[in-house]
Image 1: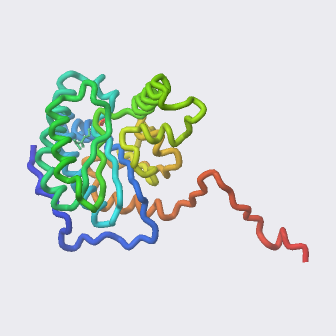
Image 2: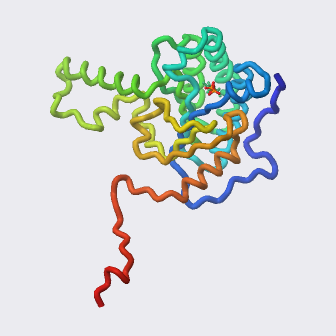
Image 3: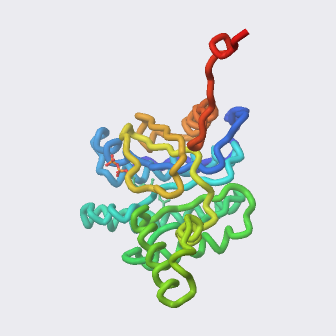
Length: 263
Ligand code: FPP
């Protein structure tokens, strides 16, 4: 495994573009690590290692661009189905990544948070996450949500269970349950709606990532595998986002004036 250089926040000659409209929350499915590695005759784990560099580069690019919030899918509730060796690797790797990158993220004024389910998550991983959350809690730059042992269905089911408990305890009446009641019980209730949802490595799937929050997200799929994705590609995706017309269920009548004009 070749050691990658540490990622710099503002390397010389790498300026972010000036974009008129930037997404307020970018969600990323960092896919293709295993295929990237296997295509080079390397084990899948080498792809995850290369992916850490991409993650830090993309975070740096997000900070440079002034993105308020980014969420990354580091380990899904479905990833437990992988081989015990890969699961063990991914847990240990998550732990060391968070440990090793915490100070850098802090220096970049990034606020780190965790979204996911406690069950099965290694206690040592959770400890590193909690430390990163604590260390960066007052940072005012980009918020980085690490979605680890995260699944969208699990998140909504957990919210439903919390609502059921409140109803059973007499704290909430069923008639008072609204969309906001559910939103308030998600893992990070103040998470912004996802504006831009990026998936690397060419698959047109959302894979149970932030389904509630992404209801009106714009989707951007690239064939680039995650280890080859970096800040330039993030900026390109944000530029594409700026060209999308968003209606949020509304509609605009665009009959041309020569057809609608009687006179
Ligand atoms: C998907 O590729 C990637 C993962 C399951 C892990 C991604 C994790 C990182 C990049 C490290 C970041 C860690 C933290 C804690 C933030 P895949 O294995 O599904 O690739 P494939 O589709 O080619 O098989």
